[in-house]
Image (cartoon, rainbow, N blue to C red; front, side, top):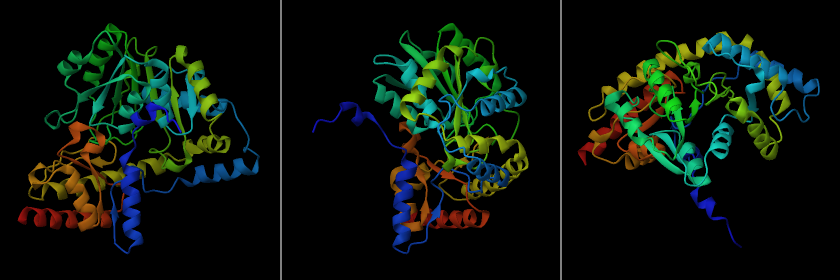
Length: 389
């Protein structure tokens, strides 16, 4: 039977592959510390769970509007105004089953064969996967350790051509924990206006910021009509399995995004949307989660930097460390494999996030402090074993 060629261009998120491998090892009796998967290890706040239960009892189990429930879109718009200083009309909000669909819908809507899309490398693998899937040209923008994994503006300028249609930003950044400073965002906004670019701004980790205040590129002059802001509830409220995200899109794209929701998922689960109305009652839970991540960051970064052969920059946001492992004497792919199978620590090779991730591994510190401390001990023993060979 014939298979469409474009399926060969569709990639995968390696975290789920490594998770399956780790689970298989656990089934064989091996003790594994999970530092591979990118989700908060906290429970969804109780007010949200109670709201979901009530929504189910009230019968919110049927189709809803493809664009999302009006009451949730209103709440999202109000929150964006209060938290990020954006003037957002609820009509520009499109609710989606998770945040990933916003990447799909954006690239499907604005990029076609022959167009060029600039994306961060290392970066979330679904960016590249979807660019390739639609037949556009993926143009990597390398984020370097010596720049704290921020953007080299001269390099960005050199990547823009008459075929460039979309620029993808992610701040705070997965996998490095880096951020794009406000002064850089302002420069990037001017470039986007000058070259008439769409910008997909992935801000799903914006609440998990350790210093300063988050700034959205959508807040700069001329950017509201060209920025697709991607966000969701998965990371902020520990709701990864609930599948709830949203886009704030320019008016010119809203109807197209809504059609894509309608054609793919029909709508986002209505009881989940009703549950999200209780997020306003869960702010203390968010603050406590970020405080715990702050403590874990200190333990992980200091622990990694104490291991000969490893160096690790302090992440400014999200809950990932991205240590440089070139001093181990083993490729990042082989080292991540060694850590899983020999040390019982599940991590991801930096190459899971692009060619520029070679020489690094990603560690998610969404795990308990005792487990993280034990993971550091295991990593240290593993490095010593490798270096002695």
